[in-house]
Picture (cartoon, rainbow, N blue to C red):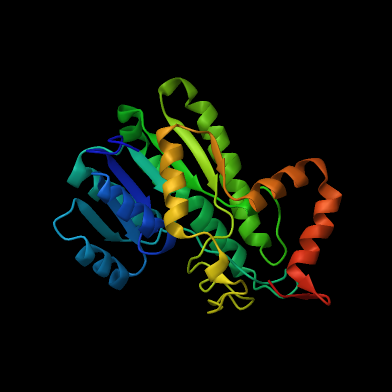
Length: 269
């Protein structure tokens, strides 16, 4: 990254855990000013304490609430003046089949994963136009391929990808780069916090978390893509293969995906 981020201001949603936290720490080490938000004030306090005397602003916010997004962006601008990069990272997942899922799950996923990105991007846009900055949406392979048990999550990520593609096209002549990232399975708290059929955090992960890509590795790849002003970033061989297979061999991918997530007719992953 060299000195690309030195002195630049980066706003990150969902920075108290996982990929967002890793992005925050890497950017501070690279000399950036960082503003981040999250729902847990306790986690934000720990992040702030661990980075004392560094240009870090932590704001408690729920990105599904427009006024929270407005407060986050306004305080970022008050503290640092402008925003050079906006990374829309905050998100939640789910693990429930449609036949069992409470309808509120689908609303919540759209509000957080999609509308949270819309709100923050809209609010930061005037500053990003001045800096000719970068908009990043942290999406998922689920935004390219619908995943069973995650239908609402897939819907929110498909919406995110399509929206960013439209916004990217609108802003092509304005010097702004809009990009979306599909990390694949990453070691994080997202599966523990995923909503079950009752719209409550499931509190466990169906995957071997230790075998997954680390948040730090994902964060580094995202920042490298920002420097190169990429359009999209799909991580892991499995992720790239899934996107390719779904594009050219969709029916076969339906069956392979079903076999991966189900055992004896039961959703196990």
